[in-house]
Amino acid sequence: MSEVIELHRPSPAVEVRDLRKEFSRRDKKAGRFARKKRAALQGVTFTIERGECVAILGQNGSGKSTLVRLLSTLLFHDGGSAEVFGHDVFSEPRPVRKLVNRVSVEASFFKKLSAGENLHYAARYYGMGPRETRAKIPAILNKVGFPADRRNEPMENLSRGMQQKVALARALLTSPVLLLLDEPTTGLDPRSKLEVQDFVRDVRRSHDATVLLCTHDLAEAEALADRIGVLDRGELLFLETVPEVLERFGVETLEEAFFVATGREFEAEADGDDEDREVFA
Amino acid sequence: MRAAASTLRAELIGLGGVVERNVYLTRRYIWWDLAFMVWTIANTLTIVFIAKGFEATGGEIDVNRATTTLLIGAVVWAYLGIVFEFMTETVAWERWEGTIEYTFMAPLSRAMHLAGAGFFAVLYGLIRAIILFIVVALFFDLQMPNADFLAAFVVLVAGSLAFIGIGVMTAVLPLISPEKGAQLGFVAQGMLLVVSGVYYPTEVLPRWMEWLSVISPATYVLDGIRDAILDGDGLSTMWDELWPLLVIGLVTAPLGLWIFRRGENYAKRHGKLKRSG
Image: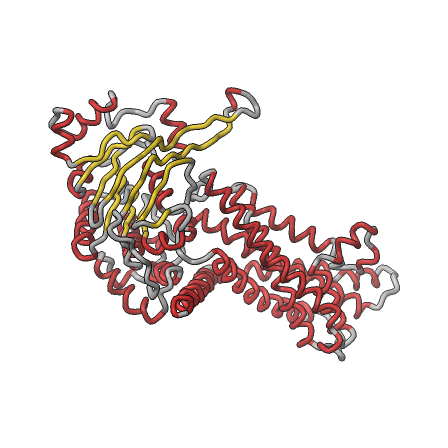
């Protein structure tokens, strides 16, 4: 990108204060025109320092994706504030968009287009011209381990693991200083999962990127993150290093910590309230 | 100054990216596009044969003039349909493919994003319109000895800014209603053309619809193209059609963008800016 966005120093990479978001949906049980509100995020406050990797754990419907969408400028909030490198996410979306990129759980591409085609046009949205992408795209696809002889195949012909590698390549192509990973390894086979996790480690080392990883994989969070937080029904219960979490709750595993903190098993079935929340998140 | 130039450069590259993406998609779906073209030709023929059919059943009519009039109306209808289709797909297709979040979180301004979609829609629509006109004309022994095709083309291009502006307004509909929004774009197309005299002079419309025809850009496009092809009117005599088109375009383009932004903000407030709506 040719433009320089001012990174307000010494601002942290992400500063979220009392962030709130609620959604309103029709409540047919209460009446034809009745609506009910559900809080997807309730007064969430945390900070991510530059170069840090923070993992936010939570069950389905806990608010992880809502948090990522808010920081991606795709949602308006209902209270509180969020800043990325000193830029307000809601009043200064344009500079924030230049600093941020993300990988989501779904491989979001035009399925009939090839990896190369998807990356070429996506790079243009970030101001990267043809000369720049001609060199960068093959290099980044190579870096994520994407085979050169498959670059012209439609994305729909690729495995989920391969598609997720292209998603990582797309996110890194724009050299983001904040990388938002929203369950990037969900649904991948074990080998692909490890490859993606290795790549995230490599990205932190080589790009000095700050990473917010949202996941419901406890082992992945423990393996990649400097600090781990738990979102439960829109509330951030804690955000600390793993030893601090285990000590605080007097347990030996993160799963036990979740149980002590919430009174529920981490892998427990969602109740009706959580199922409502899952629709909103 | 340097920052502004840099920003403009990035924006123009982004606009080019939207066009580039649509070129890739057209290439990948080319056989479907050709099939759709065949359907459009068949559909246009059903309309253009009406004049000959009227004569065959004993009616007295200037078949050549009537056929050409119907052909012009059908080509403009098809062109407008393509422009609106591409504009509503700005959201609808992206939502279906799941790319909507990535596009809307990119730093490309919404104006340039929509301008790119509009630019491609006009380019693609013009190519299709020219092919459609030529192919259908070949089915008839049409006499157009005085036709000024350049003037007709300029009028169509001049009306395109207004069509894009209205198309942008319809592009917001899938943001508000993921399920039905895209279809409403075709409703807008039909309503615009019925008051614009697509197959008949606007004078035959009820008085209140004639008033509406005054603010429809399609009215001036149809009038201008018919004058150019049927009567050989050149660009120098087209000012009565061109100035309303430019004015309507200068109004609808920013108005369309304003409406789209309101729709986008609504979608952001209610969490509709995602693949599943």
